Length: 241
Image (cartoon, rainbow, N blue to C red; front, side):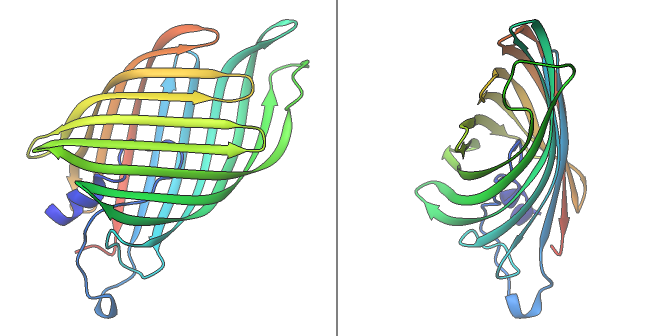
């Protein structure tokens, strides 16, 4: 259980496809391939985000020093505006990529690349010039560490180009026996939207030996106003003992 909890420290709270970063010792020749399934949804007053993802290491076993393959599907909504007034956007998409994880002082980090596909639609005719399908290149990274005993720092970031989109998130979690809890902050910026979220998250709630639950909520600020948000995420472990 402790090995799995360490692995999940590198997974919880992620909204853009993150690599697992923990020291899991295994004899690769005798173990089945490991997969981690991720799913969740965040619903806010001015935006929402839902996703399904899967991660698996090239070696078959997560060790904290891996090449990790990633597949992701997601759905984003947000409020924006144009020359004629308020506007609602919907973005369907997904990405595939690969990340390299490696040990660093007091934790583990990773950096990765991928290709993103999306299709943006608005709820009416608009002067916005970014409606329709697009393909982008993404660079992303993360850090998961324990700078103080029972205090866990999780950092995530990604940048998509050529039409720049930025995502950044930080969690500071205090570890209890059965879960971790603490403040969380997220920043997102695209061509026609900005979003800042500040709240509280509870992660690594053990449901079964192979399933973990996370919940969170707080305050949201976007270009169109302030509001609240709440979310839930599930992590499923396959091939772990």
